[in-house]
Image (cartoon, rainbow, N blue to C red):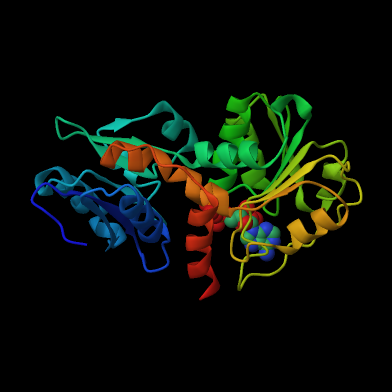
Length: 282
Ligand code: ATR
């Protein structure tokens, strides 16, 4: 790729950043659409995030994605925060406005719901949802489901205090449930989402029997490495619809790409395969 003086430049800031799939994903779209631009990984230590973000307008960069551990700090640095990002409590996309202002938004909830809608027949009025976990990913999931119209959400987490805190922040839609009641919490649910790190390569497995879960309920794991987690395999084995987490990663990237590079990109099988090849070499 040869850049010109007019090239549009964006990237991802993380610490570390080596494992981010975003350069591969945005690189695919840049190539596909023949855009004069580039998307670079930027290893930014936490104590330099503010400096790095503040430098974007002066350097003429279009903006950045933020990954671990920067998403919460960015909320304090950006000049303008989208209301959705404020509710989620984290920024994953920064766009440098025409006046040089840093506009912070969060596209994780969009990515989660878009992936779910495109890959299942789930509808918000199908019934209660169960969210396993109460971290940042669970918070995005809660906001996404509430905005989609889900009336009732059960938040099940190992640390009870985190579950009640999240349920309180998302009142009146959520109730907190103890981790040892996770199997009972599935009764009558229309959707279960795993937002914990359990089941991820290198992490302990997610131990949960699905006996109480209705056969029509959709099971969604936001873990994408491995793509087919034991939760999804167990769901498919008993006939439940199952949705993997790779689509969420792909869809959450779309709004940023459009803002920086001026083209609305889409997610197709070729893109999934391209990103998947990279996951398989890990
Ligand atoms: P993120 O912001 O990506 O969601 P996080 O805040 O570290 O990440 O949250 C990880 C989630 O996985 C939490 O809900 C965590 O439970 P705790 O709040 O009790 O820490 C959950 N988790 C991680 N390891 C777990 C384990 N061994 N058993 C049960 N839950 C676990």
